[in-house]
Length: 131
Image (cartoon, rainbow, N blue to C red):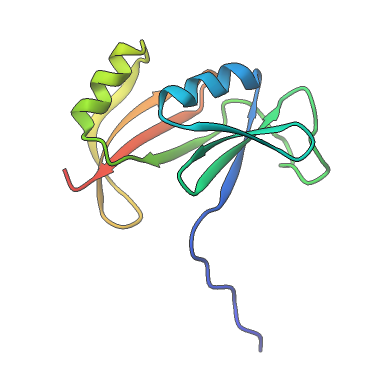
C-alpha cells in the first residue's frame, strides 16, 4: 500500500470571472497583489496563496472545472487586521457587507468574520482569528 498525500495547505484556487480587470481592482482593495504568469494569465495573491482568474468567455485550458460559472465561489480570506478596521475600510471603499461581524468555525479556531460579494457575486468571507 502506498502512502496517502500529506496536505500542507492550499496553494491556489481558480475563479471564473466576467471581467478580469474589474475583479483585480476589487481584490486589490482587500489587500491583494495582482500578478501575471504564463501566457498572460492573471491572479490575485494574498501572502503565499493566490486566486487564479479565468475569463468566463475564454477556456484557459482543458483542465478547468466541468461547468465553470462566475459567481459560484464561496471562500474565506484570513486577515490580521481587526474586524472593526476591516469594516471601516469596506465602508470607505463603498463595498457592502452582506452580513457580520459573526463568529465562524475556521480551519484552526474561531474566526470573527464579515461577508462581502465580489463583482461576480462570489461570497467572500474576511475573517480574523483571536478577536
